[in-house]
Image (cartoon, rainbow, N blue to C red):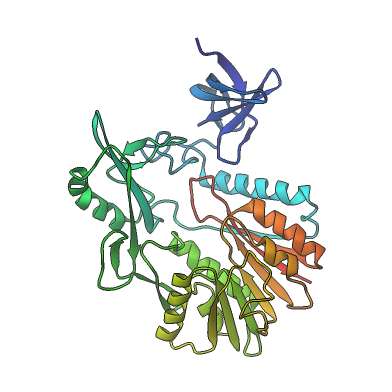
Length: 388
């Protein structure tokens, strides 16, 4: 019989589970919050930690709220709907501060209020899954900490056109399900809803800073249009490009930052590792009449000496890497090359690692701002500005 415990929850893990201790063992409880007393059943025990399922909340947290989605707790999309939004922001910022402080990066650091937006109906891109089991077809999202699929007709964090498109196609997809899982990506662009598995005569596009950017429906796009617009505006404000500035945009994608910067700077050079993204970025510059921006394909995880862009002139830098971070760039980029760096991160762990490398090169972390790109999830995005 599984062991049942009464626990005082004292914190949250990086993935949003409550943490308590029992006989010196850390116990992780999904659905529990700090300041709560709960009863939980052990489901998995290791030498240093245990995992448990929540049975009963004996003393609720004052920051607890009722989840707005009936699938919360089973669907793996959201982890924090039971925590008030302001408390979510505080928890994410507190965790980030702890990581920075462990490496002495918090000294004289200027914190800015988090960039926030709507906490429902904010996602313009989604990846659904489906499979046929003995119980019938399942069409929806992956379950929490599982490869199972939760049957979902509508999701409250999606923009409404995505829900409408999903509901319209569900019956047709149900007849195509097999014993192996399938996935479908759809995106709500400014010019309609696009399915990545269907050919379209036109490419999807979105607006940012008065510019129209096209992209591949199966490719990367910032899923939160409100936060993306604010993020781009903050990057422009922090770099403050003028007619005399030359900006280097590394991990530039389709030009999400490059093109707004090019509207203000003397010149911009964007560098990206994928041919398809470079092609889109070049086409986007041409469509928007920006002839002071150039794009190069290059592996940014290697030193730049042999790259075509290695000799370009720049005095300001923007970094927007994936979860892997920008370790190689952070090793060679020095204040002798530029006067300011803005780093946009979707992984605080690699941001902190790279900030340490930049500090060793002579940079100082000056400003930091949390981005609530994914409300109700444990995902953290952050912007940082470095000065010499």
